[in-house]
Length: 241
Image 1 (cartoon, rainbow, N blue to C red):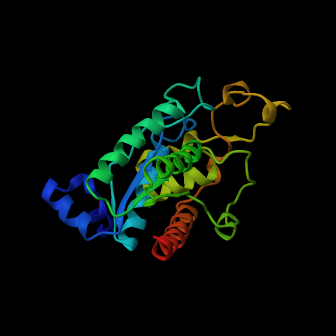
Image 2: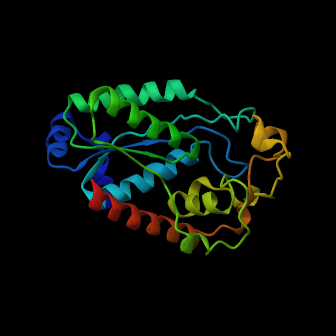
């Protein structure tokens, strides 16, 4: 596919130098390795973030770096296959990658996350680097879906968009071979009353690790979500960066 040409991990060193000099900049995606119910793979967030980033990059003259496959996943601790970095470790890893990119004169550095738990730290790090070094070429873009596209969902909205209809639909469109829809569940857990006021792991009130009705997902819904996000985010990048 044409958008795969934006992936810097397949370039040689001279190719990377040449292409970066002619690009708008680089896009670095943070993902996660965590449980996604009984029907989705552990690297769901990394796959979704990376695949969307490639499509955005192809429309904005950006290069996509190899994604970071781990993230801050405190909420899902206790489930098999979940591995969490502390916020300090994640920020340090990103900081050193950004410093290397600045040394190589990247025009712009765009941070994006396929895992919601990472995004606050991307914004925080960009602020810190601006204060410390004056680098104003570091951007952070969330993966946000429009209300109009979200309204196409066939099930009610769960408390967290994790391994339910939305993420399952995205994976059915992007990587259907990795989805076992026969094992998807329908679970709308209610958190304890004190959930907003103290730290509580999902394990305490979620059975399978899924939120919502994964069985309601379709590849058509996933396609609509991807296309809408790619078009809107690409337009925003072309306007601002």
